[in-house]
Image 1 (cartoon, rainbow, N blue to C red):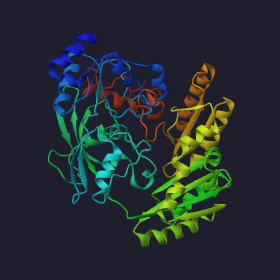
Image 2 (spheres, rainbow, N blue to C red):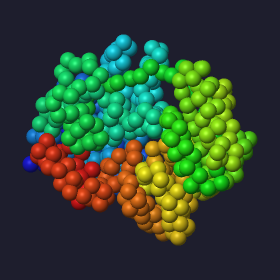
Image 3 (cartoon, helix red, strand yellow):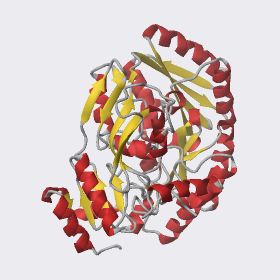
Image 4 (tube, rainbow, N blue to C red):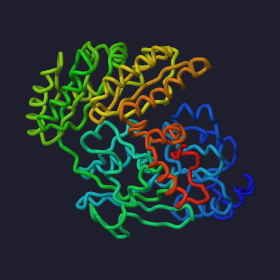
Length: 470
């Protein structure tokens, strides 16, 4: 039976050092939020936050949650965009801000063991010293944590070639709802692959803390390619970008990235950085190739030759300074959108559609029309190589009518993604925001997900209100 806030905090203080339990209201306020527009309006306060330093601390907190019946919600850096790290029903938030060690880097076996609170960029810096890197690359990499990435199966621009986080989690230490601890992927394993038993690691990756809480992760890492080059190409029509990408696939080329800037994004960037000289037209692609210097030199020219069949204009860069300049057209989206629509603020809602590559033009055109119908400013861009279309919705959050229309836009965008054979989230996760669309996307498979959840968490304490919509 659930107990009151005072009782939960008292129990936590009995089993944890005082400096690991937070319950004063002022300090709890930031834990009401993540990056989602949903959390800005819900403002759900947890009863307490614990900041563990060891797996034993996490076990103690989960045991208290199990005994008292209160929810327990794991949290990385709070950069998520779906309310996934918020406690909508109250309870205990587990902040991994102190569990951020790189436990081991085994270069010769291409793996690393890390704690879940480790910031992505910090891991990359450690790996770079050994000529390695961790391929998934979320846009929030300067702040987001590895545990959060694993919980949401995050990725980024390089997913077209390298894949998502799930491909790089070899095993995990997980605290279950009954406070027991298991290690998936083999208790002592250092193998890079296995067909032994049910792959429990994949079950936990992407489950958003609803089946268990990560306390360590064994990651596959890769040798860092020594060279890269980038092609910037402009297209008269969106359909030409799809044809151009298909030309590359037909020629046996899989670029490391293929980023799309819709006309709306190009116009915003032209206001922000006109010196970048982005071409006019309906879309721009940024295509990156990697390898040894000799490979890249040949590949970028061969790739550019194929791109020119469809593009109205293209140019490429091999010098790192010029590469960074071209990539500024993508990395500067936040600044560009603010300049293009002064007085408006971007909200994270309906922002993570992923659709079949052939459906990208239809999806963007339909989304444009919906935005125009609802009189909402929207900028489109995305990870074109794997069909991930990002929508930057811009509104005045103080305008109640505009907020309502933005909610309708996000709802219709989610339904559009399912209609064209896609998914409501390509890399940001389901959380509370997208749980309502799970039945439409997954059908009867959702019932199996719920049965797994009920079996592993019969009291429903692990991150309730997320993922398993009706």
